[in-house]
Length: 434
Image (cartoon, rainbow, N blue to C red; front, side):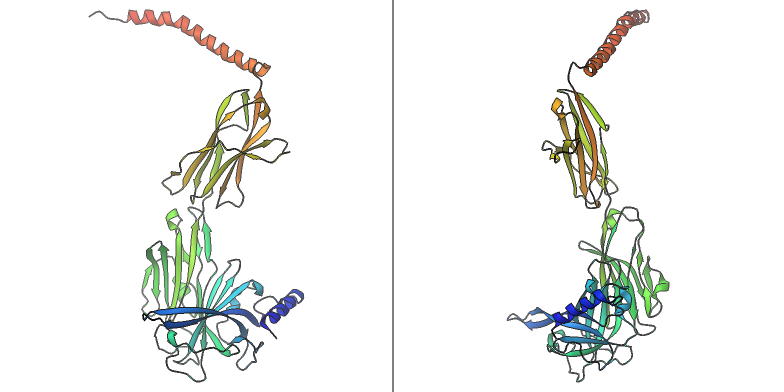
């Protein structure tokens, strides 16, 4: 039976049999084996070629027959560490499984777990949730039937046949449930990282680093053997035992908190790590310099401004549109809009203005003008609008406006006419001769 047929059959069973889709009940997962072939070129430099091969990750017991004898099978036998436990019931077809060879970088030592040998061959199995809910990296130990010296050297990998079955056990895993985090300013975030090992009191070293451009900063480090701890943000009680939570709690976030946080867990000769991306996303505050209704006379003008303030990161888009109030036509984008330069504030956020000069005509009366602001922090753009009312010059409204303005001017002239002589006399009375 081909691998594709097995996958189709499994998906069909998952659809018709309740409960079969959870990874705790699933006995296998389709995987991709990324095989490496390292050779020296004519100049003596190592060149690596990667070969993607179909494989099965089968859960069972030692001696079980392969579900598909025509493909590479990694038979994962009983262990205190079961990667399926940490998927929390994720649907099997949501998991991306990838297996790679793992080099101990020349470190030759026996794993402290039961049944381990110095000649063991190592693999990593990474399970990724397609929606980014978690990433799990498990270390698989394979004891070859006939150990060959130098098999651990990445330049002398033991070849794997297309129908070979390799019996493995999971001895350690490192996982995160927050591979990518979006946070607003002044929020308190916890970056999740967890580990599990198949034996008690492991020689454990945990480290958190922040990678920003070319700079790498150590935030926390703890070594169980020496008991030394540097930095803060991780609860030490989570570092005891064979399973622990080493999540990092951050102080109130700033724009400078953005970067890649690396959680690494080392139990010699194994070293596992996960990169966690922290993205600061602060939505803009949007406002207009107008009331909900703008009244102008025919031929009048007014500067209309849409202001987006306090956003991060920089990628904001401001557009002006107009449409009939009855919504009968599609909105028309205005092409006379001008923009200010981005203003950078002390807290790291930005502001931008988009404005245009509104020339009022009678045909524009009743139109809705709206500003639409898009930003990476928003699921939907923000809209702010006003209705334009245009009256004909000489109409009752216009005449009333003209009368009020004219009356105000006349009153001011009368006041000046009365007060000016008095001010002149008072000034002359206060003059003193030299």
